[in-house]
Each structure stands twice: as C-alpha cells, then as structure tokens.
Amino acid sequence: MNETFFLSLRLMGQGMVGIFAVILIIYVVLLFLGKPKRKEEKGGVDKEKHMD
Image 1 (cartoon, helix red, strand yellow):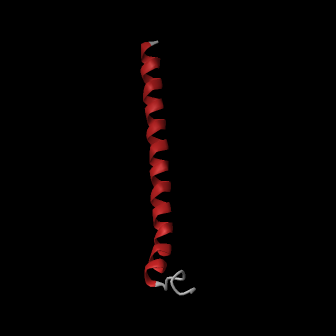
Image 2: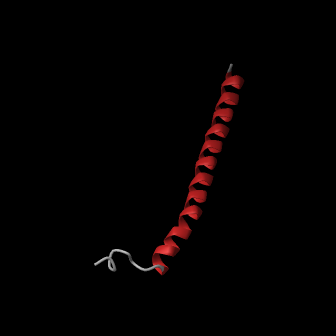
Image 3: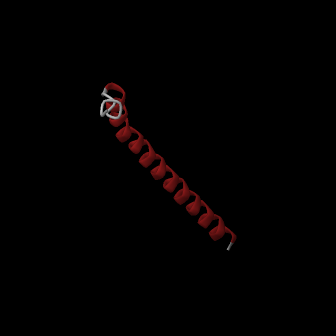
C-alpha cells in the first residue's frame, strides 16, 4: 500500500505541474495577442479629444 500511495502522489504532482504549465502558456499567448492593440492606441489619434 505504501508504494501505491507514493506512486499516486507522484502522478498527482505531475498532473498539477501540467495544469500549471498549460495555464502559463495560455497567459503568455494572451499577452502577445494583446500587444498589437496597445501599439495602435499609442500611435493612433485619440478619438475622444477630436470628437468635439
């Protein structure tokens, strides 16, 4: 029983690391997808100031 318990803990740890890695990858992808919008806002004309 002891060997099986430690084997299950190892498997659970691998699963948790895998979930963390996937969340991190999704976060990085979302950061890169958001960058072009930021560049347009900086270089573009502010629409709120010119609407008057």
